[in-house]
Image (cartoon, rainbow, N blue to C red; front, side):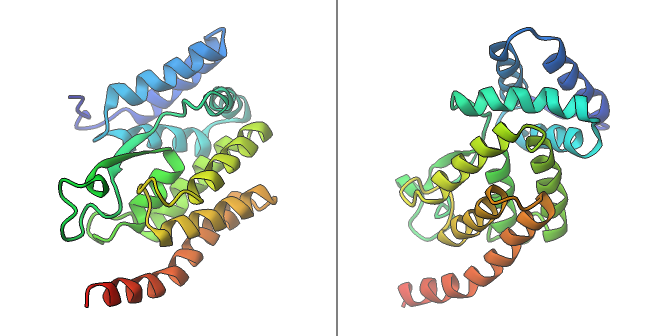
Length: 216
């Protein structure tokens, strides 16, 4: 199992990922590089892969971001955007263990951030500020390619409309839909990620009330 160094060299690792996306000759090779980095870290360290992407989105120049965005286009076209596995939303509910709802689900980087912020355990969850910073940087990276942005919005909307997969709660799916709709209609990363946070807060009281009713 991969393990992070006590003082990870984030900037150097992000630069190496950018250099690989610039130097490799084919889209297939670039997607393979993304997959190798994510798989090398494994599910427990998948947030480190997301951090590399948002570091590039936040601090990279246009050429750096465009190179990685080009790789993301091909990954989205071919359904190979590297994802990380998290427990399905019902896994921590009574009776979930050993059921289909208790299994892990694979989420793409932005969905992973959404689920991480929306999880029920506040100790482990991303704060709203942390989510906002990471999501905005990741979305700015993707938006360097209009095609990547379009394809990612299409994927997010499709996933938000799938209640059977069990990866995201209803409240999270509705908030994700609000983000994807705003982003697809031209909102910038700041506004689109804010839509997620607002929509999630609006959905949670209704979801909590329904859950309480179901447990009576």
